[in-house]
Length: 127
Figure 1 (spheres, rainbow, N blue to C red):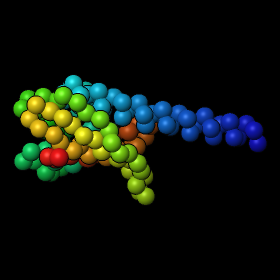
Figure 2 (figure 1 turned 135 degrees about the horizontal axis):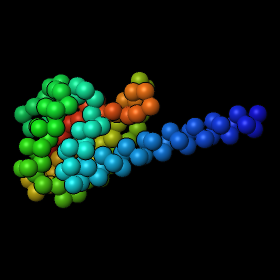
Figure 3 (figure 1 turned 60 degrees about the vertical axis):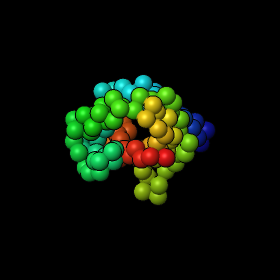
Figure 4 (figure 1 turned 90 degrees about the vertical axis):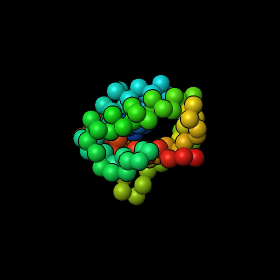
């Protein structure tokens, strides 16, 4: 029984670490406008809402759209304000982005695919 409990505890801790790890990475990429690295966490097709785009686009298209956004809006600060998991098991992060062009609300939905989390939805909206 103890071994089962220890195994469960280890699995839970590993799961929490993986969630924190991707969140920390994504926060860092947004703070530095490192779209190339951020895009590596995107699903092949991502629901993207940035500026005039509100559509499902490819990873490559999303990267180009976000690059354009960050070229106009240099990040000053970004912080996650809310996080959680929906009833369907989709994790979400909501953060405040301060840029040279104004303040924005960023919403990110993460879905576990195999052993990794992928970003399936990414939205940047005026705050």
